[in-house]
Length: 393
Image 1: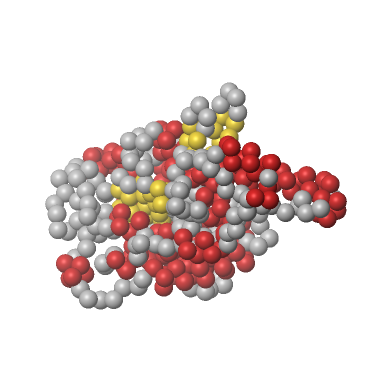
Image 2 (image 1 turned 90 degrees about the vertical axis):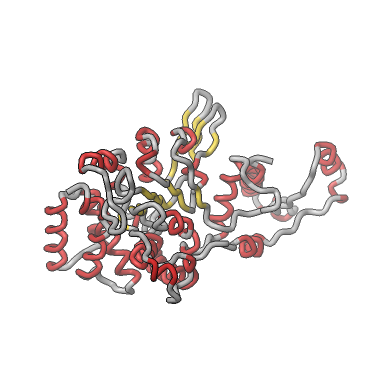
């Protein structure tokens, strides 16, 4: 039944409130416990009320259920070549940074994006329950699956409406941004999305939640996701490709890239080129890392961040740092200051892009187990601004 999990959790919360209000009397009488019964019809519900002793409560080990559900069919090992893109993907997952892939058709942009959940930290039980509640309300929970144990990967088509992306309806239902909560929202062919659809992403990207207001009620759905996007570098897709000739003119390329607004791109921390894979890399026997090995490094970096932000509220990764915290946690040396000043001046970067470079550099330092941000960390972070360096200078 749609929303059954949320209804059950609300009932448990209400029961707990009443139990606390009644104090010791409630606890001593056993009313503080929470038993769950599985019934299939209204007559069964009546029988349960009249003769509760004839029904047995359901016994579930939630953590065992989560471990059983946490299985990914994909692996980063499947991607041939693309070492630079894999490195950028590791940095993005380590700091929960938004990322965009730029490259010709068939380079592996979608293949890389689909494997993001496999290198993100495993879901905690609380995250799994929260994600399952959203999918239950949307009516997308499979009957055979009691718990969403893997991080969601949502990939809406570029024809989606703003209501489909954010959520809506007479009785508000969660949209794609909420269905991707605690996981990944992937927007393939980014310039093909309607501009007004992309603009509504600003609120969930900044606040981690989306509010839908109607005359009768107002509903807030969580929407804390990692945004991944992919796009061709030009209308034909072969700008900068050494093996194919690009027939697009500079104005055509500029118009194509400009379909995606600057403010939205400013909210994407990492821009990475994904070139076509060479034949030797495609057919080579060179061993590549699997998702488990990369995820281990990502988890270590996330632990450093959790320790760093232990005293902060609602901040669990570097990508969530506000400007005030960036100045405190992302101090750089005099040499780093000169490097960053040169990059900002030459590329004409916005203040938001400046902050994102510092946050990405902090994540790279965490992956390096470094206490301070070194020039090499800052230099790598600057390299992850492909759109600024190639199209917007």
